[in-house]
Image: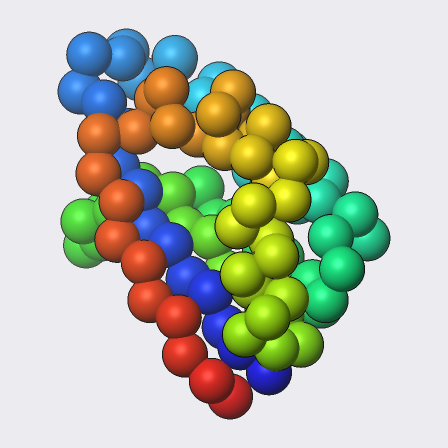
Length: 100
């Protein structure tokens, strides 16, 4: 299995209320991909970091193989969520993929 973890920070130009709405959109959009992407075993988005955190949104997903993760990256349903709910609103992205 392969874990795919991403941490984003949102653009500073958004108000606190806008950021809450953006986070909710990222969470609902990505979590709705469960059952839509071959090889995607689990997907969770955390939008409530503790004050000690330096990231605002975390994706924690699990795939059955590296090939499935590669397929997810280009899958039209994932690309649509990324292009409409994530990329326009994020300022930074850190990713770590690893085998479990």
